[in-house]
Image (cartoon, rainbow, N blue to C red; front, side, top):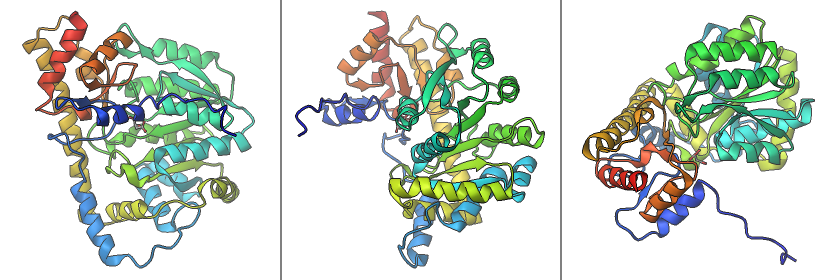
Length: 407
Ligand code: LMR
């Protein structure tokens, strides 16, 4: 019966890890998936998470199902963590206007938001940045929504095309959904400045767009997860000022707690009031139950411990800073190798200016395949994960980039 099933292409990001694992070259480098590695190129279990595991092993009473939207403790800690340091955010929470749910990491949270939007929002159109994370389009379209790109990246300056972005939003259908990356835009590493965010939010408000803020890299812009909530707070302020009615948020602990495989994150839906929130929550449960019934509990229990134990929380803030500092150092090291050791003639300033786990190098698809021939794995759009760089492989990498860009 499956004779007509065609071979699907490999995943543009995760497929690279499969190729990398098969490669026998000892110098191979994986700059594909956005997953943190330490300075020996090894995955890192955060010391704060190790401490939380210890607490959990001594205190866990059962492995029962958690409620469909996650445990009440998880949800109340999430509200405090995400909104508590902002006066307008806390007042939204206090007035019962924020519905949260545990998500199966950011991807699962976004999928639930997409399904909810399709069921209850009259407009199917979602404006998405061009480019955006490849899986965004798949998640939204597989949920029955339509995507329409808005200009985002300026290939001339390797920065933000803010004029094009604002023009496209002004032209968009009123009331469209808009997907925005909260920080460390994936794949480009280019974020609007805080002033540019104000301009974007002005148009979002005028056009009555319904924002979905996707926050997978919280902590990797400034090294401080709370400081990186600045954009979310701007959304809360806009609601408090009566200039925006609602917004949604998908958020992940994959990168900033290193809980990749635990699949833990959250979603928020801002409503018009407490009574509406009760109805929204009841329908969220109806969306989630037939997809995965209820969320996994190991990772969410670890998050609960990290967020509620002051010592472990303080350790976590340090851990995020360690990761972020290493990424900043690796950007500088690669830049130095390219410009000073190999005297590469191209302008690599964007390597230093872009933020988060990724650099959008500007390498062409041909240059990418030449790099893959040299066992350096990166996505076809020229995105590199800075986390895959470490002191022992940076020279091989810089030499390979120099060779393919000067051939
Ligand atoms: C990435 O963009 O590399 C990460 O978000 C991992 C993934 O699932 O694609």
